[in-house]
Amino acid sequence: MSAAVASAPDPPPAQIGKRHFIRCLACHSTSASARPMTGPHLEGIVGRQAASLPDFAYSETLRAQDFIWDEARLDAFLESPHTVNPGMCLTFMGLPKPADRAALIAYLKAPAP
Ligand code: HEC
View (tube, rainbow, N blue to C red):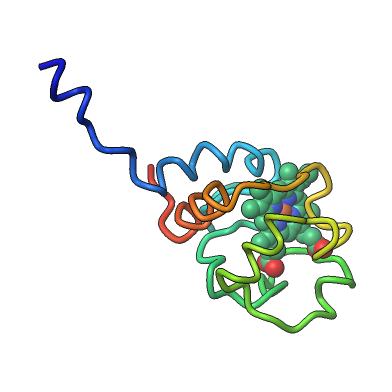
């Protein structure tokens, strides 16, 4: 029994990423059906056009930009939010470790319950 526990595999990245999403929870949900929050919901964010939710009042700055949130964009933003997108996600200071960013992106792609 204890041997089985000792050799248990690492949790999947999305589960680790869910822990990092704690930094986003105050302002974001991962579900389009969640109640409105300070930030836009992040359902389907990987591959989503920036500032594209019709019901969210985005800043002029983000609305003026034309790009898709692919993994590379998200990774750059998550590493250094305020150099990449100044004024967005104000209290989020960044995730310096690449593995943490990869786990969070895995979670955003497939939010585990
Ligand atoms: C203090 C509140 C706050 C926190 C914390 C926060 N955000 Fe945000 N986020 C916002 C707001 C507000 C916007 C809209 C910004 C704009 O319109 O310029 C936004 C926008 C975004 C967008 C762009 C969405 C789109 O539709 O283009 C992404 C992606 C995003 N946040 C990811 C995150 C992630 C991931 C975290 C956690 C690591 C996080 N945010 C933490 C408030 C927050």
